[in-house]
Length: 152
Image (tube, rainbow, N blue to C red; front, side):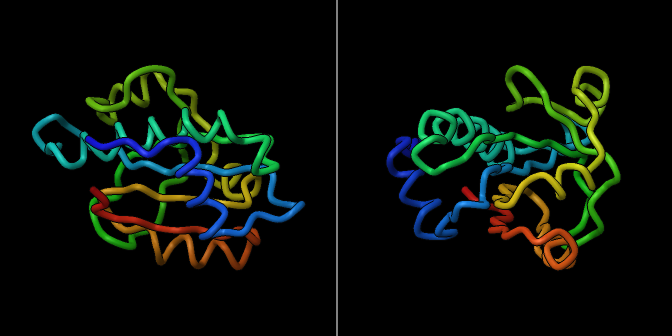
């Protein structure tokens, strides 16, 4: 897996979102498989990339005027553009082999509505597309999002 540097990620955020003074929180969204059997190498790698991006972006957050860079995980919704679940999670540790059961057991639950209300920029590195639900929620909460289903 080729990694982007913090400076490359900073350039990506700047060119895609052009953060302004009121953009102080960025969230990376990642969906989690239910079981190891449902998982595959590309999904595992995508979660590792999201984790790496969150870590790298935290090192340049001040340069982007961001107070927070959060990695937000949620149980996958099994279909492209399905409604997002009510709850999302934060999780400490390796997420590359994480499943929904372990996420619910060990993660810190947070209402998805709260996540959507508190961040102005979202990047969704997901297995299943979150474009439609994020587009609908963006009108309500006033955030911007880039969705990258199947990104590798």
